[in-house]
Amino acid sequence: MGRMAAYSAAVVEHFEHPRNAGELESPDGEATVANPVCGDRMRVMLRIADGRIAEMRWLTRGCPPAIATSSWTSELVTGWTLAEAEGLTREAIAEGVGGLPQDKLHCSVLAADALRRAIADYRRRAP
Image (cartoon, rainbow, N blue to C red):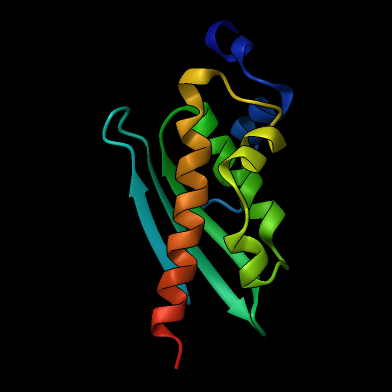
């Protein structure tokens, strides 16, 4: 298993069986963030209904924890209000996937940032 042995069972599970991955047609809000150091890139697309996240889809290119944090976050925030989702911290994301090695903590930052920026994009577009 090699490098994957450094990751929690949740990281491995979400990496091997990612949830909600893929394109979302005509999203209500979207954002792409990247980490220039490692090259990880995460795009988050949201469908908003009645002030709640009805669906979060994502496209992530990066290491297993980057994929896993995208997948885990997308499951978690479905049904949440925008305010609840904006309050989701990188610490909560890292904890939610069973912890991340120190050199992979940036993956939880990417997921939190991409989610917040996608909500901000939605707020900019909303009438």
